[in-house]
Amino acid sequence: MPTILIVDDEEDIRDLISMNLLREKDYTVIEAADGLEALASAKAQSPDLIVLDLMLPGMDGLTVCKNLKENANTKAIPVIMLTAKGRLEERIGGLEIGADDYLAKPFSPKELMLRIRNLIRRSNPNQGSDVIGMGPFSLDKSALKLVLEGEEIDLTSTEFKLLLCLIESPGVTQERATLLKRVWGYSDMIQTRTLDTHIKRLREKLGDFGPMIETSRGIGYRFCES
Amino acid sequence: MPTILIVDDEEDIRDLISMNLLREKDYTVIEAADGLEALASAKAQSPDLIVLDLMLPGMDGLTVCKNLKENANTKAIPVIMLTAKGRLEERIGGLEIGADDYLAKPFSPKELMLRIRNLIRRSNPNQGSDVIGMGPFSLDKSALKLVLEGEEIDLTSTEFKLLLCLIESPGVTQERATLLKRVWGYSDMIQTRTLDTHIKRLREKLGDFGPMIETSRGIGYRFCES
DNA sequence: CCTGTCCGTTACAATTTTGTCACCCCCTAA
DNA sequence: TTAGGGGGTGACAAAATTGTAACGGACAGG
Image (cartoon, rainbow over all chains, first blue to last red; front, side):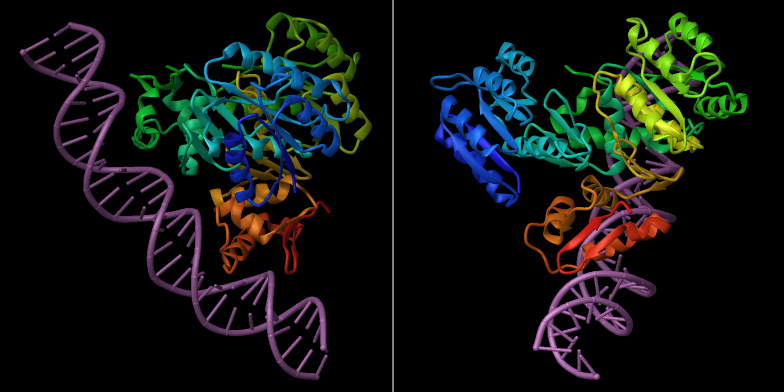
């Protein structure tokens, strides 16, 4: 049963995360309200993952993270950084210092759970991220799920493969033939409307974000970031 | 259109790989029969991937690989090493030297294609391996496919998720409740036979390897390596 | 403005996937 | 050996997924 350390000075945020974790019944949760406490807990209990807010009284999140990554005993613990929305510099700083993932506040509990599960799994023998992220999208290759702005969207396997092809190379137009081959295995059947229909279904499921799948008339489709 | 360089002194092996690659119509293929030729081609044409046999006349595969990884222009090119079956030391040597994947001869063309596609994709912005391997199994998270001893087996999304849960932690027994939660999202419905039925279907699809999914009476199931 | 081509959309039917049930066998503990 | 619980298996019906056809609108070239 993995142990998660939550570090945040706002009690209600800690509670929110704890509640979500405990509901899954798969985790043990410990909490810390400031940086020094966090470091002490991390060293004493060696949790399997740390959720770390950047904004902390006393010692700020970046420094905590740096300390963790410099200590041999805590170096390997994955860290998810919580950052205020839009503070891009901080995010970059966090990643450089060794955070394994980050999430902007206000975050969706579901997305956080997803990323936690993913990081925990990654520290297993068979590593490799299963979540492919792109703007507000998180595509979970293990759960075959899409999390869009905190909302979980179930995809059928065909839809999943199609979206994956598009989202993998944002902005790049994928030819109809390419998509038909990679998703359906067709190698010459060009005169089918199946692709169009599935694109429609995908756009529908994406809701407001449907238009991000753009049509390249006569060529194919592309996933556009804007 | 990615360019693949095949390096092997056996012409029929080169042909086999070429044929498979060209059938996909997505690749340009160049070939080399010895190490020096390979290095020259790699530098001149900077292919997107190199399939490199260990056993080569003149300069052996390991040395070629080391040379490739030491040169700034060719350093980033992914290398798939072909090794004779069982030469474990060589494999380890290959990985240490910087090969990105390896495959034992005689290999299955389908599996090689899968790994090629995977490595090519990995060199895209959204990296991360999509293939989880375990003995004769290759589970492709992007294609939702299982390659078992060279045979492609289609899995439904439920089967895929279930197998993934088991194969992720080989030897570890996953409780029924855990599987029901992770695959179906059920949180309390314990009294269902759905899991049993799907295990049966999975074992069926695994054929001779079905027994690798073992029952832990009263607890759950586990995937065993032997 | 016309025209041919390509795409979006809807409806529908075939197919596949899925969960449940019933029955039986196996395992375990007494 | 027996009884009870748990799992294997096959059949089945409900539900979801999928591909196709048909119609109409949008677009580009003339």
